[in-house]
Image (cartoon, rainbow, N blue to C red; front, side, top):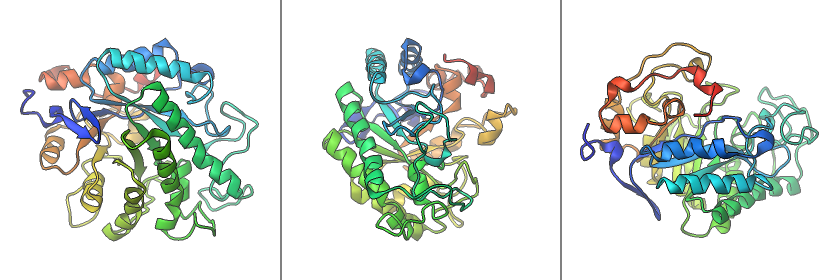
Length: 366
């Protein structure tokens, strides 16, 4: 498909950021940063994608300076000695003409005790309650919750200083912020607890503090999902009205873009409409949205990571939705993880060279 007729390659302005096309590299954990410090191999990994028509790179999750933020010592940090490594990543991407945002991450109670960069640190959570409703530790104090919020803001300030183009706040997939959304894990009786809108206050505070840290022009993206790693069938919003109550909190807090994660982008979010999650989010809030979920793939999200075979799904449906402005940007994960030239091949119509995802790709950083 030619450049001028392929909607994936039409420019897009996300606030003050003028992107060359609609393709976003989705954040994907790689665990190739020993002791949390990204090296030249990480910089080269992202630079290869920037050189091949990826409009915006969102990095793998990079953890805040709360000691229990990470569950793997090879996941990159976003503080202390790791910042020099990230500065090199930014320089390498920009040398290829690319744009890049770090994904700011805290795993919360997804962390197994005794893991991460500080194994002895106690895990963070909304209420000390697991996804099964079992209390395993005291609820955090007001001071601890405030520092959880500010840890994201400190990371956002570092991102601004290092020359990143935007930031993404990871609030999906059952990690810390998503645990605050989820009534199973959030049993708080203060302003962070209650209904879904109140349980979203933690995320709203993070957005507001990050905005103070990066200034008025740097785009802030938040990644959200209904499903959780702990429970694929979990849903925060069962109706469009419930979703509006949830997402309007982020809009009011000043977020610029909603990154709406589904396991399969083509599945309708609610009965009676073909709109997917990103489509509904845009319709309800008016904010720009990113769709993501097995783009270019037909396999189950987890199945592919377990090595199951999958056949590529046509991009025609995706492009039709994009042309209808159902959403604004498209995040591509495994296809770009495996092949840094994926976007170039799609642009040039080299469909016969596009291969489906192979889980063996996880063992290398190419």
